[in-house]
Image (tube, rainbow, N blue to C red):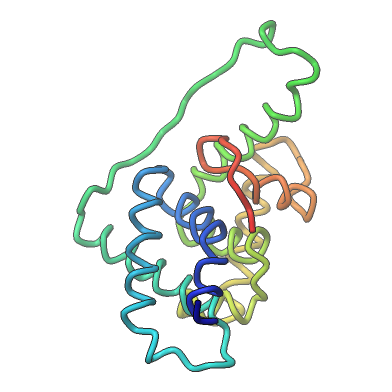
Length: 182
């Protein structure tokens, strides 16, 4: 198996998590990932060996997603307003509920802020790499991340949206389901 193919396949869990953070729908996320992989494979001759394959494929996925939104194909607003009665929560489930609250509030962020936060805090891209993926200035990414963190902290009552919360977000999709990470 070629190195390109091996490296591309290794990105699948990260691509799926990113796609779910963009669209909020597992089925659509799978379609986005499949299309991104197919486009990357079809254009593998355009990939420059030694550059950041992860950023290149993430950019393909992101661009495809926003093209689909612009065309208004299959786009639907996801609003998960599920609530759990307080008395139905066992103490051992509190962390899972906090994670679900975090994921719920994350999906309510403006797409550009959510995207910047996911790229930098969950997927481990530097601000420079995230700016390249999003096609904007590094300062723009930094301000989007700061605004997203501030918004989440306000909504979650001052909860920490730093590295430990990012680790939790990296293993959960927008619906609170745990995702595989690579």
